[in-house]
Image 1 (cartoon, each protein chain N blue to C red):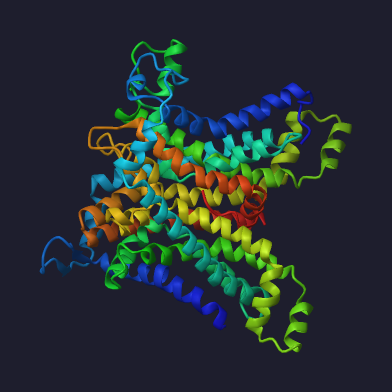
Image 2: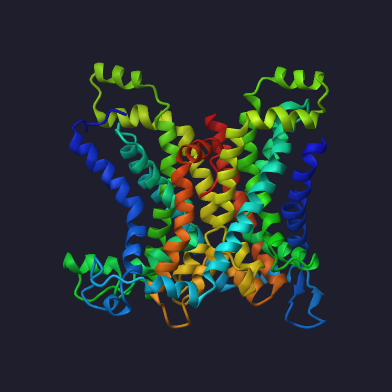
Length: 282
Length: 276
C-alpha cells in the first residue's frame, strides 16, 4: 500500500484537490486584479452569466466543431497512412520515423510551421495554389474566419493522424494473413476484404485511438494559440483558450472556474458516451 | 495486408507518400532557415535557397535565450522522466504483484486521472504553486508532469512486471532481500526495457507540454522550448527565417531521440497508447 502512496498523493494534489477547488471557486466573484473586496459569494450568478455569454457559446461551438472535423479527419488520414505503412518494405525505418516525427513534435512547433505554410504572401500553400492556377489573388488563410478555421483543422489533422496511424498499424499487424487468403479463395474483392475483415478486426484499435483523440481534441489549445491566437476576432477561439484568457490573462478566477466546470461537463459527457459504447462492443 | 499493390514501384510510391507527409514540414522549415531575409520576400517564392546562410542560426541564439530554453526543457523533461518512473514503478509494482483488492479499480483510477482536461485544473494548480511559492521554478512543471505521465508509464510497467516470474523475487527474498530490495535488485533490472520505453514516452510528453509551461513559468529565464519558440514574433513582425532556425535547433534533439529508439517508442505507444 505504501508503494501507491506517492502516486495517490500526487494525483490528489494535481487532480482531485484542483477539481474541488474549481467547483468551489465557481460560486464566487473572485478577481485577482480587483483588490480586497473582489472575493464574494455569488451563488449561481456565474453560471447564469456563462449561459448568456456569447463568447462562451462561440468557444464551445468552435471546440465541438474542431472535434467533429479533426477526429474523423485524423482517423481517415491515419488509416490511409497505416495501410500504406503496412506494405512489406525492405527498410522499415524511414516510414516508421515519418510516422513518429509528427507525433513527437510539440503542438506549438506544428502550429508555427503551418502558420508559415499558410502565410498569405510567402507561404508554400498559396504558392502551390498559384502554380495550379486556382486563384488570382492569394488566399488570406489566417486572416479570414473560415479559412483560418480550415487551416487550423488541417494542421491538427496532420499533427494527430500519425499517432492514429501508429495505433492502427499495430492493429493491422495482428490480423492473421490466413483470413485474407481464405477470402481470396472465396473470391472476395479487396474492397470487400477491407470492409469485411480489416475494419471489424481493427475495431478495438480504432476505438482506443478515437477515445484518446477525442479527449485531446476537446482540449485544443496549442495549435490555434500559436497560429491565430484565436483570431481573427474570436473566430478560432476554443474553450481551453477562453478559460486560459479569462483566468491567466484577465485574472477573473471565479468566472473562469465556472467556464471550466462547463468544459468539464462537456468532456465527461463525451467520455461516458465512449465508455458506454466500449462496454457494448466488448 | 495484401492490397492490390505488389510491384516494387507502387510500394516505393506508398513509402514516399508516408515519408513526405512526415518529413516535408520539417524539411520546408530547414530550407526556410537557410534563406536570407531578402530571398524570403521574393515573389514567386524560391524552393531551394539561392544564397545559403547560417546567419539565422546565429540570430536565433542571440535574439532570444534559446540555449537557456533548451536547458530548461532538458532539465524539466529529465527530472519529470526520472520522477515519473520512480512513482509509477512503485505503483505498477503494487498493482502487478501485491495481493491488493480492487487492483483493476486502482489501475482504472490512475488512467482516469488523465481524462480530465488539463486547462480546467490550470487555475487551482496555479494557485497551489503560488501558495507553495513554486511559480517560475522547475518543480512547478515537474510535479504536474509526473501526474501527466503516470497513466502511460504505469500501464507500460504493469505489463512488464507481470511478465517477470514471481519465483525470482521470492528467491531473492529468501536470500534476505526486503521487498523493496527485491524490486530494486531483481525486478527493475529485468524490466529495464519496459522502464526505458516508459521513460522515453514520459520524456516526450514532458518535452512537448505547452499550456502549463506557458501559464506557470512566465519569467523569461524559466521558459521551456515550446513556449520560448513562440516569442520570436513581435506584435507585427514575424522573422520567419530566424523562427525557422530556432525550430530546427529545437526539433533536432527530439528527432534524434526518437530515431535512436524508434522501436521502443512504437511498442510503448501501442501498449500505453496515450497522447494525441
